Image (cartoon, rainbow, N blue to C red; front, side, top):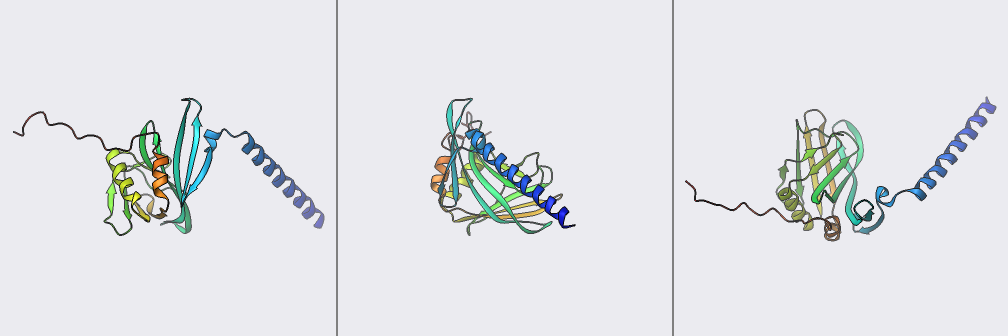
Length: 200
């Protein structure tokens, strides 16, 4: 029996060593855009800047992470992230979760900064059911305006299928994160439509 254990132990050590070497090599040959490029820290935020090798221009984004995410069907704390970035030259706010949080048909998304009144917005749930995006420009501008002046944001998702998800992010360092995250796309609300005739 002890011989079997020794063989198993040697096999395990060998497997771990091979995995470690593979991880190191993967890091050496990783495309900086795919891997996120160089990162710097601003308070609770991680700011990444890289080069888009197709478009030939720099791109950036800012993340904040938490281990204070809870879910109806999970009995331990989960991780979540909040990202400020541009997608196709449009500013978006992106949330990613460890577990499925809902879908577009039967879920609602709300947030509350500090002690301000909470809001619900028509966020979009992506097909992986783990990712939620605020992409309407006016909603993004409103969210970021509050984020810039707040210490924390509480996120709540209610879903008929997935249950309830609750998450809180600490926002220290947000001003630099906002500048970096939206450096490549304008963070302004669309101009209101001009009235061409009087109300009838």
